[in-house]
Amino acid sequence: MGSEKYPGENEWGEFLTRNGGETNAFTEFEYTNYQFKIGYQGLQKALDMQAWLFAKPLLAKDSMTREI
Image (cartoon, helix red, strand yellow):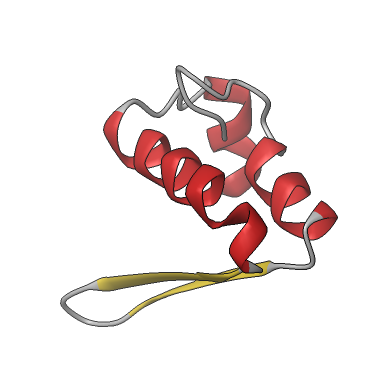
């Protein structure tokens, strides 16, 4: 849904795709697991993007409504 530093709603997934990567997540009873795969050349930016998604997510109301 974007973050303060990377505000594009699909910026994370599009970055991974452009760099040969992928992402997945699942929720179990007591935790949620987030994972991604990307080539070494994109790793530093991918880690930064993932960190911002956790630290400063945008959580736009229209995006949340679609997710629900």
